[in-house]
Each structure stands twice: as structure tokens, then as C-alpha cells.
Length: 281
Image (cartoon, rainbow, N blue to C red; front, side):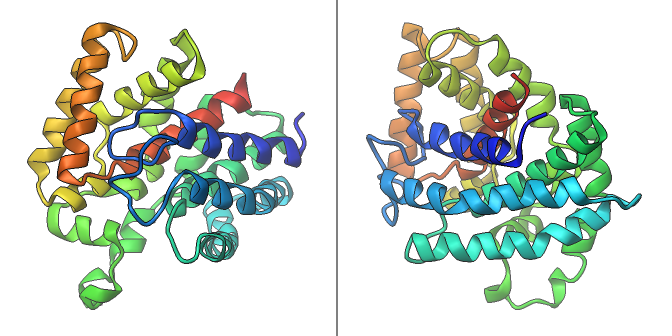
């Protein structure tokens, strides 16, 4: 049994590991933040530090949850998620560093607490519990979109209306298949230092995920397909440590800078993958 403090630290480490690995195309890292000029490596550190107490609270909510209907757990943690977002914005002077990560980690942390009290914590149990917890999420969150003004819509809502992309809500409702079926087993098999392992896992994630941040920035679905193909080629080459993989990574990094792309959705999935890996190791 791990304590809520230990579990919360896994989540904080996941945030810090993700921002620390480099070079990451279309993302902030210690070397470069050209595609995110309103934030840098230190902004992410500030955000990661302030979120730790909220991570512990998510776990404690899950530990004390005793209802049969797991969708009630989602309803319980949503106000806490909004508080965490507000703390993030205060720490970063209004910059959105981790809104997507707060959404996903809040879900993962509360489910972790719930499964620990049941003594049934595992990768499969996490995914299954999340599916039960988020049943109907996409339909419920998107059912009133047509009545909203454009200025009121989030990026995810705009991408759903324009392209039919369900984004992180759809991924979460399905129990994070990109994590549990692809990225987590892939990271477990990686060798080398954390930087190489995480970059390879990020490429694997990018190759299969529908990153709505990328579609928003580029304004084209075709860009998503092109970037997915480039990431898949890096993976097929044997990863970023191989000459061909390294060449592909640098090319993708240059194109992301030139196109002002953001791969924030993929970064959030990497964060969750790291969290699950640290939790279950």
C-alpha cells in the first residue's frame, strides 16, 4: 500500500519528467520553447510545485469513495479539479501549462485511491474503473455545444464541432487505451536513460493519438496525419537514439517550430504514461 503523499509525488514527478526530456517537437523543454512563447521550463516547474497538494487530495477522495456508481466519483472530483486549475493560473500568471494534465491526473489519482482501498490496483483495473467512472462523459459534456457562443467554447469543444474529434474526453471515456494498450507497455520495454525512453514513448504516442492541439494550431487534419507518419517512422527506425531516428526527430522538431505546432495533447498522454509506470513499478 502506498500513501496518498507517495502517489501524489508520482504525479508530480510525471509532470517534471515530461517537461525535462528533450528535444520535444512542438513542446516546452529545458532547451527550447519557441512554439510556446508565453511559457518556459520554469513556468512548468512553478505549476508542478503548486499542484502537489491537489494531487494528494484527489487520492484521498478516491480512498474514501464508497458508492456503487463510479460516475459519482467524477462529479466529486470536478470542483477539486477547478481549484487546481485556479492554483495553476495563479502560479503561472494566467498561463495554461497543465490544464489537460490536471483533468487526466485527477481521474487517475482518484481511481488509484479507490482501487487501493479495494486492494485491486493494476493497469487493467485502472482502465476498467476509469471507463465506469466516465461513462457518458463525451455525450454529457458536448450535448449543449450548439447553444454556446464561439467565445465560450474550449479548444476541445471547437475541435469536436469542426472535425468530430473527441480529444482527451474520448480517450478518457474509453479508459485511456492509448496509455494502457500502447504507451505503457512500450515504455516498459524501453532501455537507456530516462530521456531516451521518454522521447521514444512520446514518438509512439504521437504516432497513434489524435492530438487536437496540433489540429488547432495547424488548422489542418492532414498535418496531424503527416506528423503521425513521421513519428511512426522514428519508432520504426529503432527510436531517437539511432542515426535515422535522430535525423527524423530533428526534422520533426524543425517543422514544428516553423509551423508553430503544439503537441500538448500528446505531452499529457506521456505524463499519464509516466505516472502509471512509476505507480506500478
